Amino acid sequence: MAVKSYFFDTYALHEILEGNPNYLKYAEDVGIITTKLNLMEIYYDYLSKKGRVVAEKIYSYLKNSAIDLDDDLIKEAMNFRLEIKTKNPKSNVSYADAVGYIAAKRNMVKFLTGDREFGDLDNVEFVK
Image 1 (cartoon, rainbow, N blue to C red):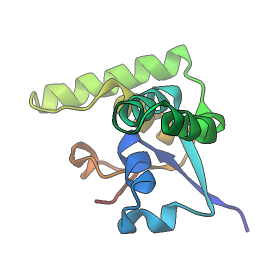
Image 2: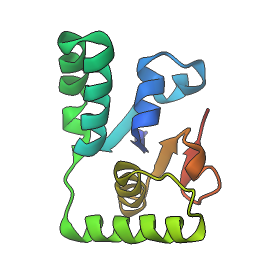
Image 3: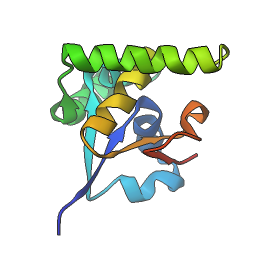
Image 4: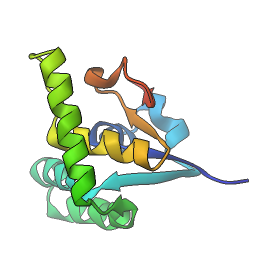
């Protein structure tokens, strides 16, 4: 049986690392796809809160799950971000999340997040 994969945004990675029970089913036997932008965010978060040793362990564990960003992906993601911002000027979709959402669609996997900005969008596995 093939392992189901998801695109893990920084929110999802953080919830799994912190042991949120709602994310338990995504913590094992699930393929992780993310980007270096998400690794950058999670590394900084753990560097600032738990120190370099913990941040390095997390980064090392996740680095092989990070996909490359090509020019077309970046441009499509920024168009998506602008579209969201135009519809809702108060929207706070980050650059990393916009890239991740488009990367998930391109890789035909669900975008795993608990970020309310994505709660009503298609192709999202929304978990709080």
